Length: 430
Ligand SMILES: NC(=O)c1ccc[n+]([C@@H]2O[C@H](COP(=O)([O-])OP(=O)(O)OC[C@H]3O[C@@H](n4cnc5c(N)ncnc54)[C@H](OP(=O)(O)O)[C@@H]3O)[C@@H](O)[C@H]2O)c1
Image (cartoon, rainbow, N blue to C red; front, side, top):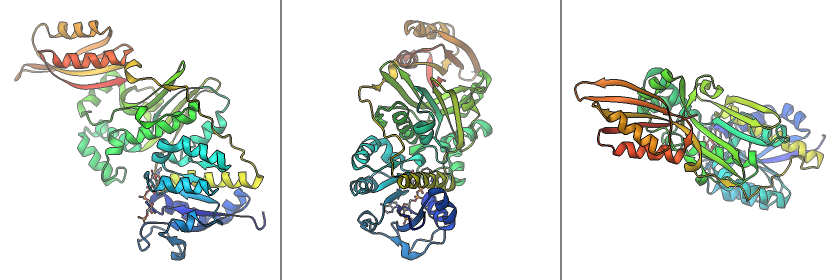
């Protein structure tokens, strides 16, 4: 080990970057012993040199000039914890082109450009590590890349966005409307000032694109993933869900079909005895099914500076060991471009509808006829509260499995029926 050193350039010194730097600076001997060589933080790229930092760091390490990392031949590894697509994507490309290894926590870049970056890295004989890009501190990528390699992955289902899980949890337990639950999540530091990426399901779709690509070794693009957010859910849905034996979660789900995969992100009613129904607060959980291993559940802190730094620095140690042995000992990826994504309409799901109707004879028959014509079989049909003042009632319907296109057609056709005031809620049943 004597004399060997791995020089690291870090981009980003925010929530995650500060914890990465702190671990490297304050735990050097322990990390070096595990890595088999000294890990040296040589330069840190930030946007603002004079910003107050949450850790003690020598100002001489900081720079705002990307070339001080990208063009420094002594720096062998680029650790990127800045976020966003450009300019960071171009920094990663430049680093790979210059023969540097890359470690990134950036789900946006990995979901949009990951397969191409991995191809470029393989050509240049360098590695790209991205454990922190999905599930924060939960070891997911390494689990797929090493421990589950012997398996044909059949399905991956996950609660992978901590913000929406926190928000849905507060709506369920305190009966809060969405806007109040989001405001509470923002105050608690679980939601961004603009929470759209989380609430509308974009963040979960990025993560599912990465997980799907790794699990099936295909290129899953974020726009191919069916995506619905949690915007339309109302507190009353949680009450009905509980009565029916379900929790409501934002689910990211992908499953193998002959020659294709399904990939979707949407809120869903999850049976209360399913492990994903019990994921609380900002936690994440990923449920994997492989043909050899059977079912595996991975649970933990899906975000936060320290858990995410755990994954980033873990990747760094892994990389150092691999360099020390002089091997790329982790398998590189080969993507099968013949496998595509099944359109949502062809997926088989179940659904829950909450329908506001006029309380008069013939309504149930009209609704039943729509389901019959769409070939959808009803599992439960309950009349909930009736309001005498405006003579309306609320119906809650759940279905047996059917093609999603038929379930959506039924929703649209019911909304057009004369005695139907509104289809107030439409959720898949998991
Ligand atoms: N936070 C989490 O819990 C978490 C979990 C998993 C993954 N991640 C991922 O980790 C990455 C970082 O997240 P974060 O929460 O640590 O972000 P953050 O707190 O906003 O910090 C971003 C850091 O990057 C720097 N930066 C941003 N754009 C830059 C640019 N163009 N050039 C140079 N420096 C730039 C900023 O510099 P200044 O400080 O000078 O402004 C800041 O230090 C993102 O990809 C995120 O998705 C975060």
